[in-house]
Amino acid sequence: MRSVNRGNTKEPTNSRSEDGNDATTRICLALSQVPAGRVVTYGELAMLAGYPRAARLVGQTLRKLPRDTKLPWHRVINAQGRISLPEPAAQRQRERLAQEGVIAIGGRIDLAKYLWRP
Image: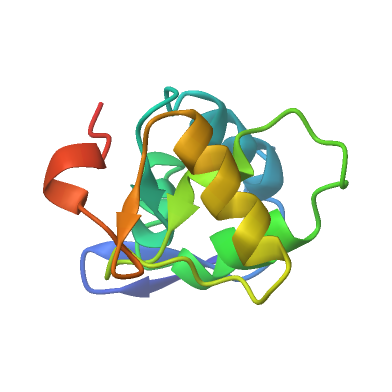
């Protein structure tokens, strides 16, 4: 994948890097590490996958996951601690998070309490 250098960060410009790592694979691998009962933001997941400043790429990647995926897609929220998905997917995400003990109060998840940092 070619990268655009913006200061000290690189942003992906397509789905393959020079060393052969696929962005989708890296994002999914990082997501698979997020433990139950914890959440990660789109931006944090992008950084963990090696793509700082690529939160939108994470969102696009998650949107393409098959409906029956085993990946914990529901553990990804926005930087304000809110669920970004439209209904009815937002309700499914809230329910899955609640099953893991992550509760949204006033529509917001307490990042100080639930944010996962490896």
